Length: 553
Image 1 (spheres, rainbow, N blue to C red):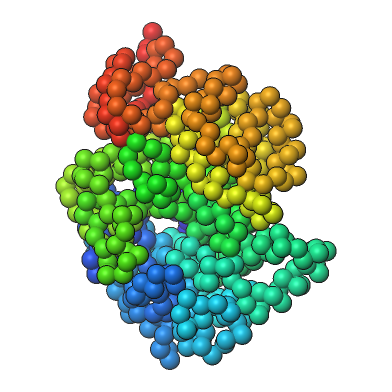
Image 2: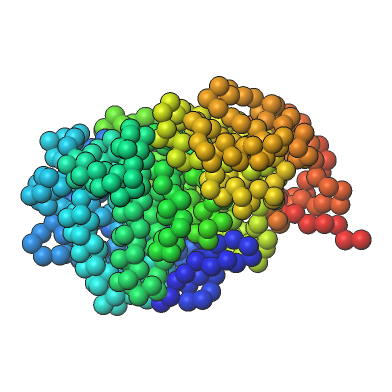
């Protein structure tokens, strides 16, 4: 088995044994309540599955009970549950490709025996590992090595195509203390960091250090996994939630480091939770996805799409709020179409996260997902390169600066999504590489940085700078700027995604909608097999994915 990420039809794509495969996967936390057979039946062959080193909560904030027993909780490793979970997938789909989601949390007994390697603060009396601890990192690599050795000696080795290395709070590389991962080891490491980098040790530098440390640990673990697998398999992680979790203490502002590493092949994040994901607005990506693609990395969107079947997993208040419950089936279907179409038109992969199991156990959903899978397979032979003429730039290091307002990056995406034309989004480090591709340049500036200032000056009249003062800027104002730069608006106040052979729209208001498309363009709805004809009356939250062709002479 060999897997890799390579360019295919213009976008980073997962290859298995030198063949491109659709990035369309399924996972559930509760493997005993899985729907592997349902997804195999609709054509899915790519699966993930949870793996736990220890029986620990995945969320120190909410204290959700552990999902399963850990491999390394006892005196000797116990791989029986891991093997059984792999077999469940293979029973449902004998030709499955599997990339385990490996929770690297160490057993409680290790953390209890090494208090100086843990954070000073804990949500409970049990302190969790500090990311600056070298002892923690070495033990993590040792256990990861044991898991990989077990897989490589197993009869199902040829079904394992890679590993997602999940660490920290919520498995997303947030610090366990949600304060940067602060402890004795972080204070020692920061002192060394300042000495080697020639830094003064300012508050801004300390805040950035936490992100740099997390990124370096991810790279370290990924390099180790690459070495153990003889660089035959893809390795990836959650990281880089620049737009969703802008607070410096979440540690997600060193994505550039990871993108420059040859040891990380794919990056993941959920679809944004902005405004609890209603219909009638864009459900944006959490990170600067176009920088991820530019650097040759595959992006996986976690479509933990709530449905009318989503239920609370327990009695904890944190899991009984509105974010955990989906809308009526009709609206859910429109959201599924949007989440799928965002991946297709943005040239990235996705997995459907059936978190507690049974979220998609409805023929309306499965039939729709079957069609999504068919479109994804067909799209492997089509142009999925972005056709956006608007570029948005953000400097992840701005969030550690004095006075930075992270609410700007979180809130502005809703307005960006209503321009009525597609946009791409990058880290500021990629400005020089891509600037000539775009007519309009929008800069998100929660605080000034040297890189932002230089790029803004270079873009001149084609630059629109959004500071915290512009947090309430209207979609109309953004649209006026883009039009002045020569960007055609497809449909005002509508979510628009566009790549070479596909166009997607999601309506943000009721009424008549007219699409501004070149003469001779034929739009065929891939879900209804109908052609777009002139002006159409639509309701808020309608989703339409079109194939784009030109009339023959």
